[in-house]
Length: 632
Image 1 (cartoon, helix red, strand yellow):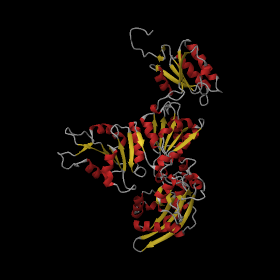
Image 2: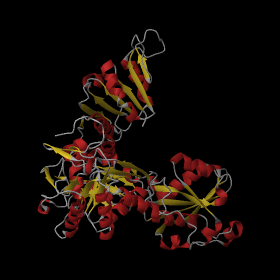
Image 3: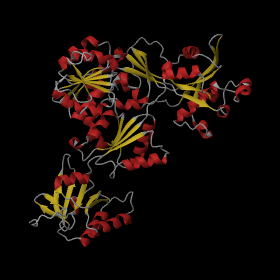
Image 4: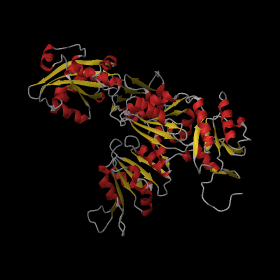
């Protein structure tokens, strides 16, 4: 998104400097001219020394308005309203406008909230500044996804319709019918269960959402169209056939079958057509991918209308029908390795439009066929965030994690962890909860969604890379043949339980330490026992995770015996439970006085080393500095 940032005063400019890294490279920054000059990257308006510069803030805004997709003002909201009023056209064309007060307390989505992206920008700005986003759309107030963004995460295209009429019915809570013939149904999970939209067949709908490859018949009620990209167009054409003839022929074929132009996923043809100008121009004009198949691959596809003449000419009895079906089969499986015969056998594709020939004496000739894939094509590149949410308090969440959570299409995690971050989530996001024992299923589902183009946040408590989901997701990716690029991936660190406990206790980790999980669900007990013995003998400060459950009692007793054999009974111990969450407890004791009944799966057990000492309610492990006197 290309943005313009306006910060007239020095104070506003200071606040804006913290936002510039968030906004990316495509941002133009404007401020009032300063006699001392403005530092990079700021541009000045109202500079008497520069006659080419805008003479005022209003001129700077008017100059940049048609060049950007968003405007961010650090200014009073009333002033911004007066500045942009002469420039506004409609919500389909206006850029996003976000206003931030100079104190950095509020990020207001002023206009262009949905289509323009102002709501999303306001959330990101608020996350960066620790501000409160102010979003006033009706859908936001009702906790429902914006209708005009419903299909964006899945790569769908928006069609025609009465968008205001249907949106009004939704916000009034009136029954809205949904007719869906293709595309993922994941979007439904973002809607409240009691909203009339999710009713299977409302008896008297006042509006309709049509999701599919076809255009809806007249209904007499407000209707909007979303079109998953499931149609693959097979193309055969003479050399030199023009783009205009190809497009016109395609539109006539679609119209004859009631199919939507917006549902086209891409084009498919023979390898020989890789340098066909008209075909390449058509694909480029609409951002469609083109699949070029070798003749031998097309020859293996059963088609209803093979041609011996075509086989004699290019080596396959079908180009248009075979290419359409093969492309739809490949994308229907989410797998482009067409050279493997099993892909064709397993793919599900339907030939909706058998081949039809279109000829022109002046513009060439083409043969077109259309097949439907079982799964929509998405041009989006999926992304995975593996997020550590810290000990539970949102104040301990990193800025990077906050930013990721505001941008994710899907947030995946154990229900307790989803509940903890719920205040940061917003309508339209999918919340996918699963039991604590289903980590593998969670990882595979997150990867599958990212491979379909979704932005997915997988959350773990503490740090995702310390007994969290990061390792499992990466293992699954590697085993699936991940190229390291698609989907892209970021691991965002969080405050682990032992760090949170150490902060509450003072400084118990000032010297070498280790963490050991006592859970033998994934690690054999003999391995755990060996590590405990080594850590006890090496005089590490030790943090014991997953120490004791109702069914798993023996490992903790055995661990205590190992440490009591290696360390004196007066060795300091801390029991930390639910830190930074409601019901937090922190108890100091010793190895000899430790009561195992106080320990459960939510408890982290800290065992000091030979130098660790207690001072009041603090634990301190000396680093080794020479301070002169010994602590008392």
